[in-house]
Image 1: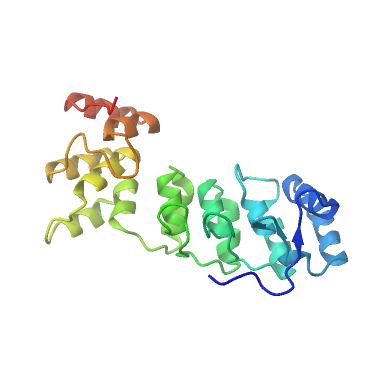
Image 2: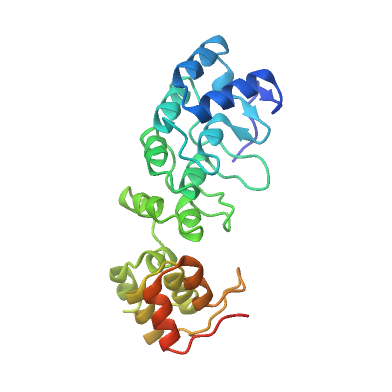
Length: 239
């Protein structure tokens, strides 16, 4: 992942230039952003604290006005589309766009060359698709799959990809069937949940990362069909 490039400008959050460029990004004022980039050619690679300007574009809650045009302006000026956050994790801007369900900006980053399977997520050091499925950002999750992201069995379960689940169970049973069942309930995928329960999943499985049963996960996700089915099967809540 490497360190910060030599000569990368580091701006304090209270620096007037940082305030101006963040305001331009968050209000979608692409003309003003281009003016600032022209005045300071090194600004495109600047960091404001732990973030690059592309991280500002994709910061929660995302969906800032003219996000794709903002991405284009920054990349044209020299921003690194695969730059890493330098704090408690190493997420790229694509991880952040995935975590905000911001499909338009996600597409803009991929079109600019973002690594679709970049590691470094806050979720187990994984990919943008790991973030999207863990945080229930289903639009970006599906778009990442459409655009060629590597799909694991976990992703398949959360997205209801029965074709991949069936193929996986044609051989030796996956060891993590409980996690997959939990993921299907988390994703509101009734048919995938039925399939995995029929193949030995624990109805009340609690994964290592969260003290929630599949029923708790389904309730949090709000999928009425999965909730009703789990109740019919006698599922319990962790509490």
